[in-house]
Image (cartoon, rainbow, N blue to C red):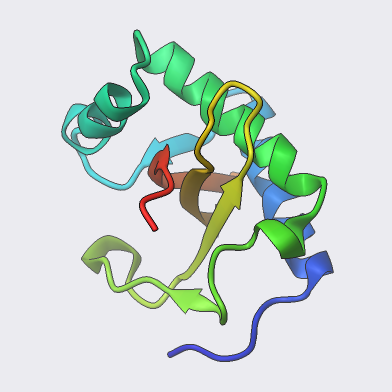
Length: 131
């Protein structure tokens, strides 16, 4: 189900949750699929990145860029809910940012899950904007 676009404050809070997951010890970043190479391999190739470390650095930088203007960077007209079986009906957070190292916009999407240990960033996408 989709409804109104999230507020700037809500978007900022989700981006802050994402940063906290990246900065947590232990690291609280997961990939949607069980095998990250299947999910991320195409994005790595499309972005021409040498390895996963460079990929995660890019994602982290994109989150920081989106925090500068969350409402402008939000990449959907309304709230977005997941239809992925492992995240069914969870809120998804899609953003597009202008990264200084890329000519096209960079699109990334994630979900934040909370449990007794804290908040986890569940990674879904990071690639050049295809629209």
